Length: 639
Image 1 (tube, rainbow, N blue to C red):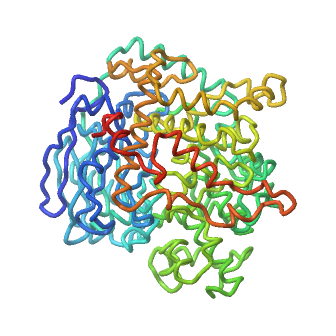
Image 2 (image 1 turned 120 degrees about the vertical axis):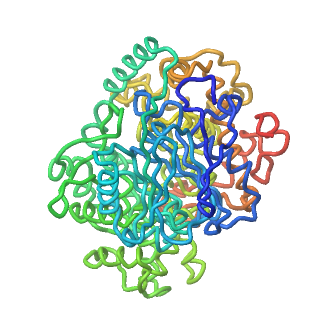
């Protein structure tokens, strides 16, 4: 149990082979060091994986973890994390989700669930107030995610004789057939990246439902209520979280990316798409958006609702618009909405599916692998996605991802991935800090795990995107901040508020231009702070997370302690991945991004990766091998 509020005080191990559960020891000292969520999951994997495990082996673990703010009503706090050894990358990875499962897992009395072993046949698991029941899932086999969840809801209602309020996670055909980038779906939200759905499939686990009567307590209800009121007002008054995201969703970034040369086009051959206006947020809002929606407890409401096949469903995010738009030279917005729905229903990551597709189109064009796929041709792609999910025809190969395909057929220079994970839609040759983040990100080519420095390089602030100056230190501190936010269970979109609103509203003002000019020179100061963050023995309104954690849990948390928790999270994930072969040699990008300028007339329009990597490792206190040493791990209390 625990002396802190916000937590349920219980972590359970579920063994699918024996169908038994046991308690997992997770102390208050662990909570103080790792807070929860992704950091908690990484430490559990660090303590239990040796480096000999395989993604599809029964010895692999799945950790589903919540944060202490999940389910408490804190702003945008409905996130939960799924971590495991990834079949796409071969290293540990995590996938964050905004569905309702984390909320109901805590109502079932659990902070986290650790899953090991494997079922003999396809099963689904029901959790009710901490009690586990296994059910045969033969009748759910090959069902898509929406139908699976509808069927499970009916089964629960019939079994209990009433309407059951519960959370669910499930996989679709892609997960069952071990597509390496299969996702886990909760409601309409996806834990999309790194193939967590395929790990579920390898364990013959179709779905989990969670329900219960437990309610997380709040340490200082009055203080929390007042703090949350001020925070929500700030979120709603900020130009990004209160205007752009509610009005346009993440799709609103398409136009800004186009202006700055950041919009992946034709498999990242270019950074601008001539027909971007047909697939941007403004067009989506005017022509297709039916309503706005959002996750539980979220004041931002960034989700789009669009019509597809006579239904109103979740609309595409920025990544899907960019990668199934300009990156395959498609300007049909209605088709993108349809593909987004189809991929979610099949249980497949839209980012890796689209990135693999773009590689295949270019490989076909170059005669490396004749698949019949071509840029600009979209008529048969719905069938291709279904073939991937069922591993039929060329779908069986596309299900392996771009890294494996390029190793088999060639074309590694234009397989746009890092550590096996396909990159997000931000073309990094005009935002080299984002390029560094892609390369050094623990889980692979991820914009968020990479620190999302592009928000400073054109999508929020407007610092020089081509200079490597300061980018390594800024990348590090942004990574640590995002790690810490995720630990609490909150959405990373709230981090947009860290950039003061006036900097966004008037980007060409004198002060704004001065800040943009100065920020790249702040690297040394950032590095000093990273070494001794405890000097920040206070909190500031722009970073409200530590204060919220105190009001909710009663855990004393300063800005410095919060920063340190994020650093600890990033380092423990790196340390466990070192057991699976990660080192500086894996922190790389395809040559298209490092060797070929985006603008042939401007040699600076490429990512000077090796130069920035060396500075980044020094800033992190890692060795030249790109790994934290024993001294670093002891200093962080990991060992």
